[in-house]
Length: 116
Ligand SMILES: [Ca+2]
Ligand SMILES: [Ca+2]
Image (cartoon, rainbow, N blue to C red; front, side):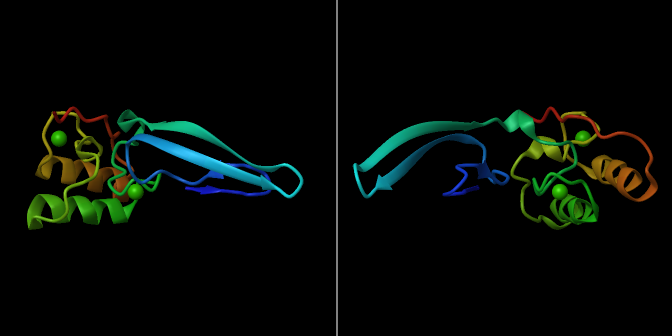
């Protein structure tokens, strides 16, 4: 995520979940500098079902990541529940079929997962 030094807008997509501390420093030639601390909470429940790489889109890239995880011992999704697209509390070939149908055939819906 980035902070625009002129507008002060924080933008971008977080790549990790959790609590973060942000320290912002501003310097003025006349009065010295000031700092302020902010807290940022990125909630894991904010994921989109099927968005395995957390880029806010569900597309063939996510299908490839899911196939690699399920069949090839690929990288574990950062939010495993994003891969449990049929909501049966497990990530397995059924989720791959569900993702393929959704992404390539526009069939079905992707559900929020429940992997513990
Ligand atoms: Ca994605
Ligand atoms: Ca599942």
